[in-house]
Amino acid sequence: MSYAPQQGYAGEYAPTQGGTPMGFHPQGYQPGNYPPPSQGGYQPSAQGYQPGGYQPSAQGYQPGGYQPPAQGYQPGGYQPPGQGYQPQPGYQPPSGYPQPAGFGQPPISTQPGMGPPPGPPGGLEGWMNMPQGIPNTPPGLEYLTMIDQLLVHQKVELLEAFTGFETKNKFTIKNSVGQKMYYAVEDTDCLTRNCCGPNRPFDMKILDNYKNEVIHLYRPLACDSCCFPCCLQSMEVTAPPGNVIGSIEQKWSICTPLFTIKNAAGDDVLKIEGPICTFSICGDVEFKVLALDGVTQVGKISKQWAGLLREAFTDADYFGITFPMDLDVRMKAVMLGACFLIDAMFFEKARNQETDRPGMF
Image 1 (cartoon, rainbow, N blue to C red):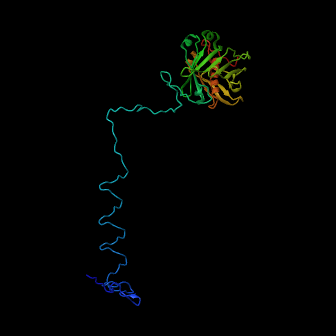
Image 2: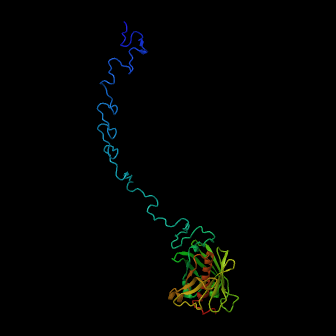
């Protein structure tokens, strides 16, 4: 069987005529029965290939029959809440479940470091909270850093009131709102109290709420009259006991009581001036606390009127002490000692008899 060559090809090789192979057309290869481009047939689209039955969308590809939601994807049957996720109620303990320890107790109102340490049995009701961690302050005097006023109340001794037998004086020291700060107890023997009367020497122990002695006062035996200018009254203040922090010394005068408050080095710090008449007649008796210029008043020690019956039948007195808030805490303690010295000199009765007199005679 032999191969039949197509038109334009003869045998194994079609010779050329004038350099052009036989069967070659200059406008391109024209296979048999294929119409040239100038003749009718397929005309390409001006917009490119268009598959049959598909029209491009102006908004992009749209799968048949599906319209995207206007607010995004919405899973079938679920609508997200308008305010976000709302947790469901948690586990409810069964009735009778014990409450945790401390539940229902009032909140802590005292800051750490401001309250007192655990105290003796019976609680600390009515006591002022002691500040903690105050530098350069003798132990026990932290109370005095927070105040500018003291109230000193003497306890009524019934035996002394009815019999005139002199007993040890006892005092309660409070702040301006009535909270207790210290106790003061006189330390003398019976013979000294009843023989020497108001001029007796004494030791005064000032105790905190734990019965610790924080201030010690010592008054030696001396005179208080202007007739003996070389032997006038004085008091030494130590805090803690054995460590001198200051003293009070009486100055010679004829009309009015005069005192000087000194520091541990013996330097004058303040002056105290009393009235000519120290009788307590339905009113307070004030001793002015002055600066070193002798004119500027910075505080006072006042013997307060305690009522007719108390004044007439006892020597249990009420005192108020005021001083600058920024005064050295040691000088505040010395001011407290000055109050006890003034009480012993002018308001202590001998066998319930008033011995006060005008001036310093």
